[in-house]
Amino acid sequence: MVRTQSILTVLAASTLLILVGLPVLFIILQAIFPDFARGSLEGAFSKLVIITENDRLLLQARNTLMLAFSVMLGSLLFGLPIGVLRGLFHIPGARGWDVVFLIPFLIPPFIAAIAWMMTLQPRGYLFQLLGFDMGDFLFSFTGVAFVMTLNLFPLVYFAVSRALEMVGGRFAAAARVHGARKLQAFFLITLPLSIPAIAASLLIVFAMSIEEFGTPAALAARTGFEVLVTGIYNRLSDWPIDLSGAALGSVMLMAMVLAAFTLQNWIATRRSYISQTGKPADLDQADLGAWRWPVLGLFALVAAIGVVIPLAAIAVTSFTATISGGLSWSNFDTCHYAEIFQQGSRAVQALITSGWLAVLTALATAAIGGLVAYIVVRGTGRGRALMDGLSVLPNAIPAIVLAVGIILAWNSPYLPISLYGTAAILLIAYIGILLPYPIRYAIARLRQISGSLDDAARVAGASQMQALRHVTLPLIAPSLIAAMMLVFAIASRELVASIMLAPAGMRTVGTFVFAQFEQGSVQTGMAMSMIAITITSGILLAVNLWLARQGSSAFSG
Image 1 (cartoon, rainbow, N blue to C red):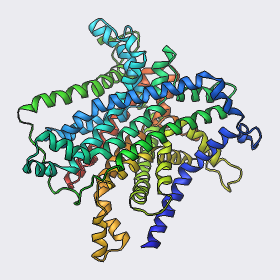
Image 2 (cartoon, helix red, strand yellow):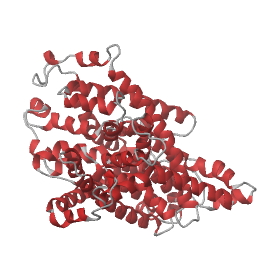
Image 3 (tube, rainbow, N blue to C red):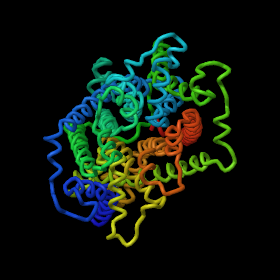
Image 4 (cartoon, one colour):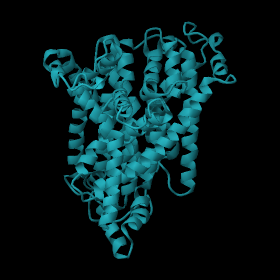
């Protein structure tokens, strides 16, 4: 047992160090030594004066925290009610709603921001249809937080609904038998058992909010509202390039997320809310009764705001011959789609490339994430807390900065071979960036499963590996499958790492769409986005239906 535990721990730790620790180390060294990229260790800590001498950096840090907390609150307001309803009640078309609320992950944030701009800006679609615009709202702090909330609230929805389905209604029913009222049973039994999953989802929302670049850059730039990630981008894109300043801003982002991680970990572990059994035999979801139509109305309202409006804006723009022509039948055309599907089109190649990258990333992150989560929760080594903290760092670093760290690390002259300039470096970046998702979901699930189940398997004669394979893995498989689908959705439209690391001639969906916008071909970019969203949604729906037939839905667990 000790040997198996040691092997698993070494394997998990080594993987994390290679994927995450090495790029982070190079980023920290670059923040400390301004000329580290040129092989010099002179002038250590000389760039730290930026923090005290430049109020702009501190202002960006304050704006980052304000935005992250606002998005967390918004995601909770949007995702918690429908997540609770989805987990505890029988919702007509539940799996269909799950797929609908996964769509925001399929829309690149900068595409969603542009879609809202096309809708709410002066002379936008809302003005053309109803005669008024909401440009002042959109191009403000509140507007940025609103758009980012619509991109991220599904994280809370999926975490809450899946956790409540795992808990089931049996424990609350037992409390009702002993005299508890419905609200008492919910707040004293059901909700506490779901706290780890809720806290984990809010941590991911916080981390994604502070590292998101597309939405603040597209919307907040007009108001002068700067956050750390846009400041870092400017330091990397404006001449002279300031690698040390960008690395220092990244260190500040890491500190923010580590503080949030510590708080989430404290909330999840301060009390022991675990069940002594595995997956409930029956979900035991209650009927809505007279509340059926009001609840469906709430789901439809959230879906309309978070999914239908931006998706409709993307679709309409993709079918317009010219932007200036507006919403008129004479201005609708399919020429942009025909351009994409021309023989030898680079767009088709981009779709294929993004597809296999997303599949490999989903499989790799699930395997690594499950192993790391098992060691963190079930292991006994002293380095578990360090591994747990290291696993969340990719969300603390903007993808563009992590990409720089990967370039510095994997293009080092000390390595016998260099992966830079190959497809492998892009896959490594994808895995490193998206690894926190399966780890956080698997850890949240494992903390709800009593270790006595593993002990019982060992007493029955199973080895540690057999107990892991036949007991623990089946119990956390639904969470890992759901995380894989989220990873697939995000990886299929990843942009920043692709721009920085993709080899010459290799295009992904994100880089193709970005290039179209850079060239002013907004409609072609929107057409490509619609194709990618449709294909990815169809794949995810087919996988979920297949899993449902096998008796294990990726969303319902």
